[in-house]
Amino acid sequence: MKPTPMSELARRARDASRSLRTLSTRDKNVALLAMAASLREHRQTIETANGHDRRADMPAPKKDRLRVDVNAIAESLDAIAKLPDPVGGCEVRKPEGEFELKRKRVPLGVILMIFESRPNVTPEAGALCLKSGNAAILKGGSEARHTNEAMMRAMEGTFPAGAIQLVSGGHDEISELLGLDELIDLVIPRGGEGLIRAVAEQSRIPVLKHYRGNCHVYVDANAELDMAYRIVENSKCQRPATCNAAEKVLVHRDVAREFVPRLAELGVELRGDEAARKLLEMKPATEEDWAEEYLDLVLGVKVVGSLDEAIDHIEQYGSHHTDAIVTADKTNAERFLDEVDSATVLWNASTRIADGGLFGLGAEVGISTDKLHARGPMGLEELTTYKWVVEGRGNLRE
Image (cartoon, rainbow, N blue to C red; front, side):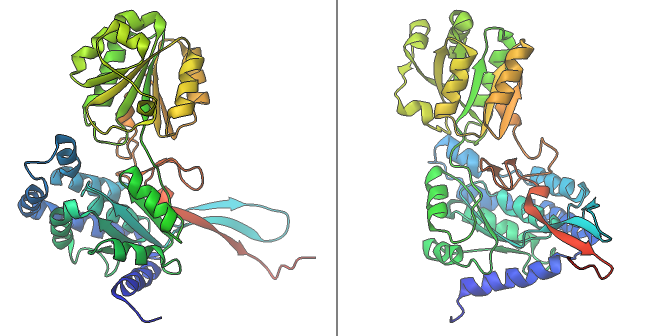
């Protein structure tokens, strides 16, 4: 097959991945610190480029998704440099027979990231791939083109050649990359449900994904209501355009009369079931609302009669991403944590805590709702796999 710009780019990444497999932890950390320092040095240029992408006529949630904090990104790269290197870690096993068996942590190889908005993904995903010994191919959306290009220019020369590459172009280039299964080992799409489904349906390469972040906060009958309000407010309002923002609040009927009216103080659009609308004026929720990921200052409200009803509702409409319970009842909390089948479950904590940085991962390449290989916020270890290493003494199988 005749080489193309995309196949040549993927081949450079594959070649780089071979040397990255054995790159020392020290050399990786030196590169990460240099990347962080260069971002700080070029902060003004990056922020100017970010201003071009964040147009004044954009809706506020989209502008928020495009916003970059250069100092915060640089700090996350510093944090990644301080984390233990997962590559080379060994689990020693002692099977019967006179040979030594190890399960050794190794990089995945070449990782393709396809993402919308969120230009912080460019340096952070690149840094996580580098520290875990993987080569990264990054394809950001056109809406963040100026910011992504400015950050890549800032970091030029700070990491090994071919280790981190930014792809220009559009759908044709993405389609070609998704067919290069001999050169690329994993695809991680980050963005709206439409993008993720399109990638999953088209790709010949394994895809790690989450389709929606339809996250819930359940306010139990035994909840401390001031705490519950603060958790709902933080979960919904701090950054409503993120995948770990709460989209629904379920309120036990025993506390609904006192709690539901307080939701008016959030200053968001409320859409409720009949029981909630009897307690506070709000728009009626449709069947479609219960499964919707708003990514905006909109919140669905439902009154439930029991913990079982809350769990059943999350099972039916949730996206297996992040769900929280607020309660003083340990038994109810433990049931919720055990029975809700989500990548992250929380007790008396905001859904916004489901984050790679807060989980001590330095940053994250995404939050997976898959069950194979990785689940939840993905950091360094989730970007590795393992191989079996046998050291024998002429051992044969009888």
